[in-house]
Image (cartoon, rainbow, N blue to C red; front, side):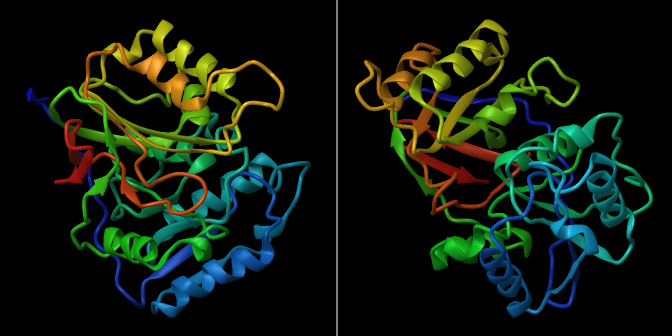
Amino acid sequence: MQSKTQNLKTKIVPPPLKPGDLLRVISPSGALREFEAFQKGVEIWRSRGYRVELFPEIDDKWGYLAGKDESRREQLATAWQEPECRGVLCTRGGFGSSRILENWTWQNLENSAPKWLIGFSDITALLWSLYTAGISGVHGSVLTTLACEPDWSIQRLFDCVEGRPLAPLKGCGWGGGVVNGIVLPGNLTVATHLLGTPMLPDLDGVILALEDVTEAPYRIDRMLTQWRMSSVLSKVSGIALGSFSRCEPPANVPSFSVEEVLRDRLGDLKIPIVSNLPFGHDAPNAALPVGVTVELDADQGILNIL
């Protein structure tokens, strides 16, 4: 078994949350549609003793977006700059967060304690942008998906933001030894569209943790081929793959399976890889902190937060 350790650049982790803290809810991406699921997600946070406050614009619609870019950008800026606010919860994914990152800077980083930013899917763009500013967030359930999570996954999210240790995640090891690195979790499609932009973090020594949903195998192939041709995969130390749910090929069309595509496009990189880890779209979506040190054991198939 090969063991490998990279030089690590840890990020600032926000102070642990505690019941009574104020959390702001924002809609930075797609228009809110799943109102019952959303209310259930809000209630889970409130049942834990948190003060959860919504912006009046939370259910605005502008086409497929949750309001115009200026409105969604203002929600994020207001929540981020509010001194009493300790965390920012996202309603849902969809598309749109990258639009509000145009000409965006994370304001008042020096003048206030870092806040938790929690979400996944399209929220990947915000999480990775925040990571480039030196702050760790949480790749975890948005409010419209939280109530669908099993109890252990919900508890893991609260363990993550309240400062308790996180249990290792078990998947399928592809071999290649053990590596330590900074974990960078996100949605493959959203992350692919950050290639070549200032929002793409430095990937030297990073362990990429990727997932996706409703993408046909040829589209996964196309995205991973772009990653290969951009040469950024040569920088990463390991890859942790979550669920690629509802990524079946179209009926009666010749195709590889998504598992075959992942093996074909990633299997020759000669780095530790673990697949089938329990995070991503469709429960369970185990919370993963962004920018913290992890150990990826590709022989045993384990991702461990250190």
